[in-house]
Every structure is written in C-alpha cells, then in structure tokens.
Image 1 (cartoon, rainbow, N blue to C red):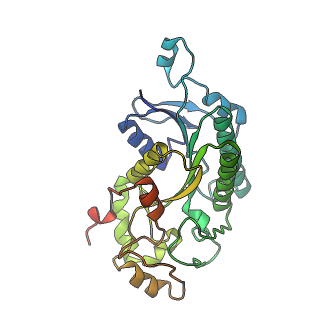
Image 2 (image 1 turned 180 degrees about the vertical axis):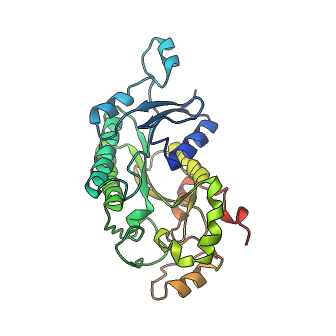
Image 3 (image 1 turned 180 degrees about the horizontal axis):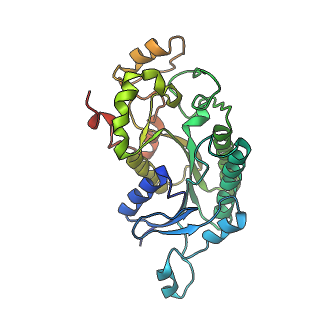
Length: 297
C-alpha cells in the first residue's frame, strides 16, 4: 500500500521537484500550498500554514475525490513534509517573514503530532549558518560547516529557520516523534546549470552559499531517505551535494580565499565546505547529480 504524505509548499521551486521525485518512488501525495501544483495525480489544497485550524483540517482531509469511495473517511497519514514558507528575505517585510515561517512551522508540527503522525520532515536552511543574508562581508567560524556548528543568523529568514529547528526539537522531545530538519543549500534546478560558468569565474560570488548547492532532484532523494529512516528523534541534516562549486581542491581553495578561517578536520579532495557527511553516513545519501556532469570546464 502506498505511503500517504502531506507535503506543504509543493508548488515552490524546491517542492515541485521533490514532490515529483516522491511520486516516482510510489508515494501518494497531497500538496498544501497557496498556489496549485501542475503534477498529475497530486491534488493541491489551498491553505495557509499560519492558520492553525487549517493545518488540523488539511491533515484530516481526503487527498482527492477517490477518498470518498471507501466510505471510511480520510485515511491515515504516514508523514508530513513541510517546505511551505516565505522563501527568503526581501519578499515580505522582515516581521511578516518571521511570523509566517515560525508560526506556520509551529502549526504544522503541532497539528501533526497531536493527530498521531510520527514522522515529520521540515525545511531548514543554509542561511542558519549566518553568512548568506548577513550585513556586510561576514566570515564563517570554521570549515567544514556541519550540523554542530554555532549557527548565528542575523536576518529574519535565517533566524526563523533556526527558531523552527528549536520548535521541532521541542515537539520531538515532548512526543517522541521523529522530526528531521534539512538545512537545504542553494537549490539548483536541472535547467540552471548554465549559471555555473559564472560561479566558477567569480568564486567569491558563492561565499554566501558556502560554495555549495543541492540539485533539486537529489533533494528529493534526501527527503525520501528521511521518510524511510525511523527512530532518530530530532535530527538536523545538511541537504547539499557532495562537492565544492569551484575547480580547485577544497583545502587549496579555502587557503586561497578564506585564509585565516580554521579547518577543523581533513576534507575530501573536492568536499563541499557545507558538508553532507552526516546525510551520507546516517541516511545513506548518494548524489546522482554532480554539477561536473553538466558543466563544461
């Protein structure tokens, strides 16, 4: 029987690729968004994550008209994947970005755990590492950036994502549910690899992204693996691809462009400074879309 997944934000840049990946893996998906998703077999419920009542309602809804045929009411939900958010700064005023993202995540997690759903995946962000939307040129504390890093964002978006991680941890401790936060890197869609020559020509343009990225399709794999991996309680995973977006080996690159920033452990030859080691070791992630397959050098 297909696992039934409620996916918030499936119409967004990252979400639509992850939904497509999950459908291809055999999941039954209900999308919850403010805009419909053009994905065959996936219904969209138009709902506002900032409204707690709406979140309780969508998690007790039929996925489509076929649900009425059983006569048994809506079926159980196996997992919630929560991507819906104001996706960055400078779209809404800072206070509104913070409000929607934090209250929305609280509402989704609260509704899920109180309805007995034991697996929740939330979208956190590379911005929690504090450089992406920093005021001025801020250095990272050290490399690599791993999940135990002292995250210190100063912007409303990154701060909202950090608060969401704390919310997830609180609910996981309170309920025993598995709630995994994915610190998603700069999302690259399949048609966007034409941007990489400019990245390589101007390395410092990628500092705010820690010279890392996540292919939207590989993000789908990470979400799939997280759904399948049970029993970890609250966890944070960097959701990025394996390699640095530069042609120099990582240690040589960091010595040239980030002289003086400590490197705390040996790095693989082209390991991304924002490291996915935990996702590889714990979830079993194996990237399929290395940028080098698509970008002539």
